Structure formats: structure tokens, C-alpha cells
Image (tube, rainbow, N blue to C red; front, top):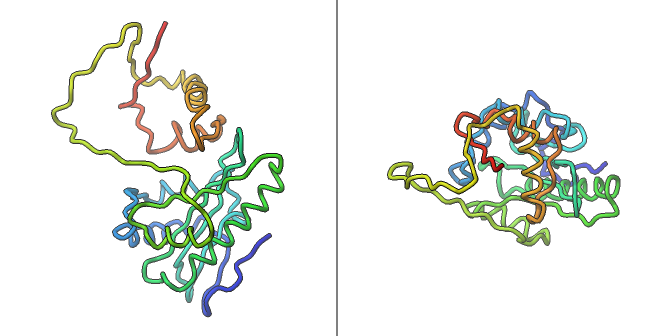
Amino acid sequence: MPELPDLPAGLSARPLRPDDIEAIVRLLAAAEPLDDTGENENADDLTEWFVNERLDLAADSRVVEDAGELVAWATVMDLGNHRDEYALRLDGRVHPDHRARGIGRVLLRWQLDRSAELHRARHPEMGGRFAVGVTTAHRSLESLVVRARMEPVQYYWQMHRPVTGLPAPRATDGVELVPYDRERDEEVRVTHNRAFADHFGTAERDAYAWQTWFTGQRAFRPDVSRLALAD
């Protein structure tokens, strides 16, 4: 299993533990004014993301410490149910006070090596895609992944508007909007998978992934969600 070579002097690495979550929350809060991700997760949010059956913390995560202080972290996430390619999500962050020390470069190298290892072990018959999300503001991360010979393949835009002055809802013949119904959650999952079957970079969501990161997530709001029914 790949380790972290060439860490700057005085730094050490180990797998992420559940009790690191609070430190990661503080790290992300310190980085958000610079990186502008639009996310502001608390400890419960990150516990959902990190502590589950799909992330093997011992094998697929690393934190970097400086004199006992957590200054960076990285994970390799296999979301499961790969359709056309073996896609992995690579996440991580370096505390702003510890950037430009080579920590990010070492962590990314470890992520890519670990991703290649998982690819060979689980789905060598598929092509592989190892994805890093980069915000427009996070220029240092952009430079890092470009130097690692990664290239942009997909873009997302965030669009905002006030919730005042909304247009009147338009009726659609034969379609009824109803409140979200937990009894139909499996139908929603199947419909979601069908709807995104041709969407680049989207894997099918099995029942566990759906419950872990979609409608079973703390952030999901069934009270303001709707189902569209036809026939």
C-alpha cells in the first residue's frame, strides 16, 4: 500500500480517525475564505461523509500532522456501482498556514498511487478516472493538479437568484407535483439512475450510496422536496 514519501522535515502522516473530524472542520473553516467552495460543513456533516462502509479510513485516508497539529488531510473515495469507468473521488485540503511546503504535492501523489492500486484490484477491465474538484478561487490546487498532468474534463457553474419575486409555478399536463414520500424512495433512486444514465461522470447509486449521500443525508430536506408523478 502506498505511503507518503518526501514529507517536509518535522511532519508525520497517519490514517484519518473519526476523532479528527473536529480538527478538519476547523481547517476547512480557515481555508474557506481563500478557497470559496461554498460549503460550510460541521462535524456531523463530515462524519456522514467519512465514517461509513464505503471509505476504508485505514487504507484510503491520510492526515498530516505538525507537532501534533492536523495541518492537512486527503481521502480516496470509491462511491460504488461503476458503469463505464472506474471513477474515484479524491478530496483533501492543506491548512492555509502550511501551504507552499510541498504537502499538497505529496498528498496528491499518494492519492494517485492509491487510486491506481484500487483500479488494478477492483476493475482493471474498465478505464479509470480519478477526479479532483477545483474551485475557481483555489488557484494553488489548480496549479498542483496541472503539474500532476491532470486535465479539466468537466465544469460546473453555481447560479444564484433571490427567493423573492418568484414566477408563478407552471402546470404541466398529466404531471402532478406531490410532497416527498419516503415510501417511494426506492422509486426515486431508480428514476435518478435512469435519468443520469448518459450523464458524464455519474455512476449509478446503489441503495447504500443513496441512503448515505442522498436522501438519507442530514442535509436532505424532504419537507421542501417534491415528486413529479405521471399516470
